[in-house]
Length: 147
Image (cartoon, rainbow, N blue to C red; front, side):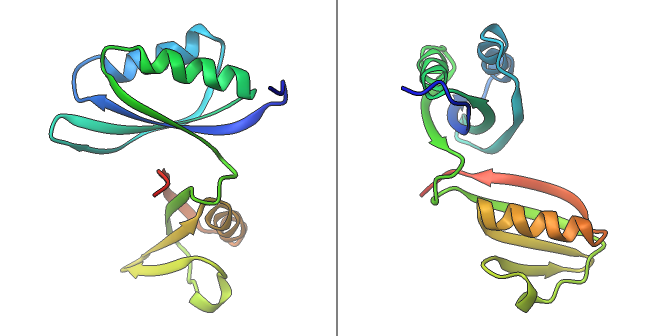
């Protein structure tokens, strides 16, 4: 295994109960790993899906996943490299006029003053960076688990 740091996503299915988020954050904190983002994607039937973005070596990422899986509130953990082509993203932007033909490789949807971009993470991230340069404000950006 390599000691090279990579960007990862841990898609974690957890019980919807008090302290679940704190327990997950504690696993990263105890190992000195800062997460880039943490978000709750869906909660239904007492189970929620959380996405944790972090940077670590493959070895440390595997340790984190094994530790997360042992938590009482965790039902399953799926570790995915950020460069995995199956990782998708959704971005919501305001203050931008987007011509769908100018944003290659992403779905562009309009809802009043908001623009919603969907597609593979690298493509959506590149489009968001370009649009930010043009004055767009990012209201939300979330990563979706692979399907």
